[in-house]
Image (cartoon, rainbow, N blue to C red; front, top):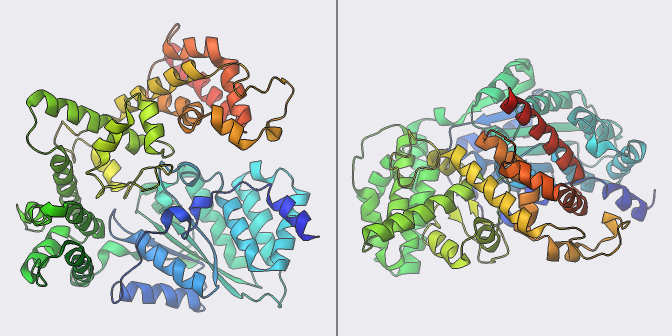
Amino acid sequence: MFFAEQQQYLSKLPHAPQAAFNSFDKQHDPLCLQNTRVDILKEIRAWADGQDERSIFWLNGLAGTGKSTIARTIAREYHEQKRLGASFFFSRGGGDVSHAGKFFTSIALQLVDKSRPLKRHVCEAIAEHSDIANQALRDQWRQLILQPLSKLDNSFSHPSLLIVVDALDECEGENDIRIILQLFAEARSLSRVQLRVFMTSRPEVPIRYGFYQLPYSEHRDFVLHNISISVINHDIAVFFDHQFKVIRQERGLAADWPGNENIRVLVRKAAGLFIWAATACRFINEGRRYTARRLSLLLEGNTSLTKPENQLSDIYLTVLKSSVGQGYEEKEREELCETLRITLGTIAILFSPLPALSLARLLRMPKEDVDQTVDDLHSILDIPEDQSRPIRLHHPSFRDFLVSKARCNDPQFLVDEKKAHGILAGFCLQLMSEKLKRDICGLHSPGALAREVQQDRIEQFLTLELQYACLHWVQHVQKSETRLKDDGQVHVFLQKHFLHWLEALSLMRKTSGGILALISLDSMDAVSRA
C-alpha cells in the first residue's frame, strides 16, 4: 500500500487535534517542577517500565490536586523517550475532547506514527471497515488498535508503549466511560507489544464503578489526595518559591519578598490543592502595581485547616470580588455583576469554547464589554493573546464553584445553571433565526456536494458562533429542562428554518448530529405532552 493511498485511508478517521498533551492549545500548561511529586512519578515510571501485569494505572484525586500536571509530565517524558503511543486529555465543554466520539480514532492516528507496519495494518482495517468511524467504541478499539497491534512481529522497535488519558471524569456519557475502561483492560492480551494505559480522574461514581467491575489484577490504583500532607506542602512550597521568584523579577520587588512566613501561610491556605496555589500566583501577578495588595487579600482571614473545597471557593470569590472593584455606584455595580455573571456563566456551560468576538456576538453584546469583563480574570480564565483562539477555564473546578449554591455563597456571582442554559438556548435560536436562510453560502447550485464547497467559504457565511448555535442549541434546550409548547420559540424556529438548519449542518458535515438532536427533541416533546 503506497504512502498516498495510506494517507487517503487515514484521512477518513475523524480526530481531535487538541486532545494530545502537546497540542498547540496546551503548550503553556505546566509540568511538575524539579524535586516535586518525586515519589508518585517514581512509582508511575516503575509501573510503566516494569513487568507488572496490570496494564492500567489509575491516578485518582480530588479537583485541584495536580493530576493533569502529573499526566503532562509523564506524557512529555515518554514522548521524548519515543515510548509514548498516544495521549488524550479530556476537557468538559471542550468540543471534541469532551466526549468519546473521536477518542479511539484520535489514539489510532497517533499510534500509526510509531511504525510503518502498524500504519499499514491500521490502513488495512480502514479499507476493510470503511464506516469504522461511525461504529461502536468496541469495534473501533478492536479494529483500529488492538488487532493492528496484535499483528506486529518481533521487528517492532517499540516493545513497550504508553497511552496517557487525562481527566476521564470529564468525558460525557457514563456508559462510554465504563466501556473505555473495559476495552483498555484487553490490552493485557497483547504479546508482541506491552501496552500500558495511564489514566487520571476524580474518584467519581461512574469511574469507581467501572473499575470495580474489572478484576483487581487488571489495574493499579493510586489515590493522590492520600499522600502525606507534609509531602504535598513541601511540593506546594517549592511551587510558590519558583513562582514568586518570577513575580519578583517581573515586578522589581525586593529579593526577600514575600517572606518565608507569608509563604508558609499561603501553603496552609492551599490545603493541599495545587490549583489553589496556581490561582493565587496568577491573581497576585495580574495585580501589577497592586501585587502586594493582592497578596495581603489572600493572607487575610482564617488560616486554619478547613476542607480544601472551601479554600478553593474562597479564592475564587476573592478573585471575582476584586474584578468588580470599588468606586462604582450601586446601579453600576449591579450592571457590572450582571454582565460578569452572564459572561462567566456562558463560558462555564459552553459545550465548545469560543473566542471573545464570537462569544460577544452570541450574547448580543459589544465585544468591548466581554473584553473588559474578563480582563481582570486571567487567574481563572485562559485568555489567549491571539483573539481568534477561544477563551477557556484554567480548571474545571471553577465551573463547579460557579453553579453551586453551597460553594458560591455570594448571589451576585452565583449562576443558575438551568436558567443559563435556557438563556443561551434563546440566544442560539435568535441568532439562527436571523442568519440562516436558503443557499446560505450563495452556491446557486442545489445539487452541490458539501465536500466540494471550500472551507473558507463555509466559514465566511457560517461564522463560529452560528456554527456553535446550529450544533448545540438542542443540548442547551435539554439542559434548561424547558417544556416545549406549540408556538413556543423552538416550535416557531423549526417551522420557519428547519430546512435552513439542515442545510447548514450538511455544509458543516454534521447532519448526523442533527438527526440525534431531532430524536432528543422528540423525546422532550413526549415528556412535555405527558
